[in-house]
Length: 125
Image (cartoon, rainbow, N blue to C red):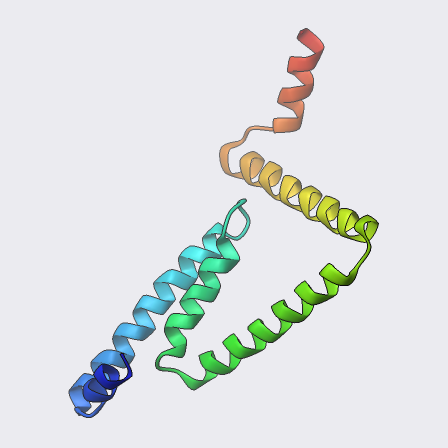
């Protein structure tokens, strides 16, 4: 892979085309990831994937990707050292956050209030 990229970079036109292609492809992946962030699923993982695409050609993206890896690794190590109670509290906080985001997304995007709909359903049955 590296030799192919070096061969492309050896030509000024190839270098420009590579930078443009990597820039546009990375931007598309990052934008899709950012759109998916508020939804349950791999939104941040897709954003990091787009950042990895940018890192092929852009130094600032390599630094940001290394920064992200360091902090995700540190966070993961910290969480695994915590007691079961603390990990449960973190899981509950994440669940509540995702629930609120889904509720707001459905309410603002589709105009459906899930909480009111569920409460109405429970009251009638």
